[in-house]
Structure formats: structure tokens, C-alpha cells
Image (cartoon, rainbow, N blue to C red; front, side, top):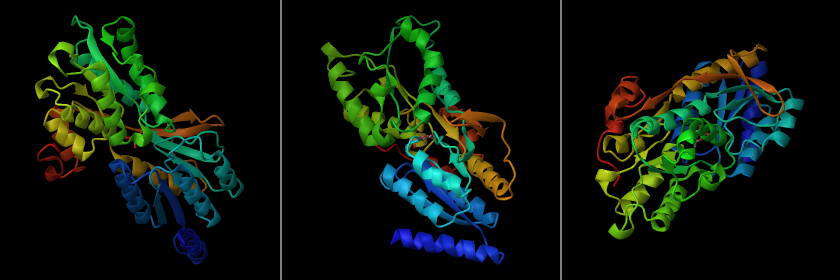
Length: 357
Ligand code: BGC
């Protein structure tokens, strides 16, 4: 049913386009479960509608890859003029986007790169390698790794295996932390040091929580006196993984005064509230309004047959895709208001109140 409605919608868009009516743009976001994508989708839809486009906005169901591929195929069949895709799995679109290429439909990779496809005309994102380095730099400075005696205990939580940003974030973080790990100043007592050992399926809090609970009992973090290890820092690649780790530590009775430095990304409201209560130490703000504005400009340019503004390129295995990064900002309890409230991204009430637990 959804398929036919979508086809009808885009067909109507095409037909009416010839009579001067709006063109249809297909927007496919990965999930509604993780808060940021709802903001991304809504901001982008509003920006495109303001520019006079009709927008078909769809979210992946439960991080289901084939469902998202189907959505995209339907958008192509229905004649959407430009596709904007934030893929659940960066490797899963090669085949379906051959069809986009045949139909001359340009594709914009949104936040996450779409690998191995010549149909990708543009990539708008944040520099994920830099975001990973920001998270690690925060840990390095807070623990004063250059001067303090240590050793300090760290655990790592990476994101979903299919997300191309995970490797970028990890490599960025390791560019900062590797020397300290090699020198033994930082230790990973679980011995799970490789990216693949630290994945969090679907970036879900529940998955991160389950893995952290396992580490609490296998390593003995903050547990009984005679077998207790202090956990100094947890490098979490985003806020949903951070929330899962926080919940596991709280549920395990980890002493609040000894709470580890937990990093994150996205400045989800729950994480910002947790930061105010000492339950998360930092996050990275990626202004989805700026990304939406950037992408709306790119859609307009592509529809006009012009090249969108780009300051860099990013190779997706098939071609060097013109790319543009928006600015990312490290947020700690000290600059929550300056970064998030003064800019109007959140209302004061959004990020006030009690921590979840
Ligand atoms: C995005 C992050 C986000 C994560 C989970 C990544 O690709 O860059 O901002 O937290 O996906 O949705």
C-alpha cells in the first residue's frame, strides 16, 4: 500500500511539475528511534518546502536495511527528481542506485557516505574523523595523560557495523589515544581494543547497556571491594551508546562520585540533561539546521543542473564525490547554554530537569 501511495505521490509531483507545480524530492532517513534523525528529517523537509519543493520523507523501520533500500527504489520508480539518503548501511545501495544513475537522478549522501556508487553527486556531513579526535582529545586533556602517572582504565563503544562513519570516528580517536595505549598509560582491561570488538548494533542504547553490564561483571568495574577496578573513561561514539553505558553503570551501583568520563555525539536532550548531572562528560554538537540548509542548497543547484558548493572531495570507492563539512562543536557542562540554548537549537526547558535515573 505504502508503495502505491508513494508512487502516486511522486507521479502527481511529476505531472504537476510540468504545469509549474513543485518537483518531488525523496528524503530517506535511517531511523526514528535515534532522536537526531527526526530533527534532520524535519529540518530538511521544512527547508526544501520553503524552497518550493514537495518532499517525500521516509524513515527506515527498525534500522532495517532492505526496507530502506525498498523505499529508495520506490522513490526512483516514482520519478523523484533528487534523492537525499542517510544510509543505515553505507554498502547496501550500490545496486539500487544503478537505477538512479540510469534515470539521471542525482543522489545526495546525507551525513553518512554511500559507498561504491557513481550516482552519488554530493556528500554533506560533518568531519567524522575530527569528531572522533575531539572525543579522544577531551579524554586526553581531562585525564591529563601527558603529566599524570596513571595508568588509567578505558573502554570503547563504537557504533553500528554498517555505518561508514564508525571507522572515521574510530580512526580519529585512535590518532589521539594510540600512543597512550601503546605506552600502557591507558589500559583497556576488557582487551577489546579493535573497532569490530566494540560495535553497538543499530547504535542502540540497549545494546550498549548490555555490553557494559557484561564488562562490569567480567572486569569487575566498581564492584565489590576486593575485586574492584576503577573505570576512568568510556569513549562512546555517540549519545545513544553513552546513554546505555550510563544506565548500566547506574544500575550496577557504580559510585556517582567516581563516575567515568563518558563521551558522546549529537547533544541529544537526554545526554545534555545527563551532562548537567555529571552522568556524561561531553558530547559533540552537530547542528542539523546547518546540515539541512546545506543540503537544501545542493538540491536547488542539482535541479538547476549546476554543481553544488563543495570545499573538499570524499572517495566512495567509485568516484571522488564533491563534499562539504559543517562545523562540529565540543560541548561540556560549561558551554551547554552558549552552544545549544543561545543558538535557539533547544529551549531552556528542553535541557533542564532531573536526570533520567
Ligand atoms: C551519525 C551520528 C549518529 C549515529 C547514530 C552516525 O552516522 O554521524 O551523528 O549519532 O550515526 O545515529
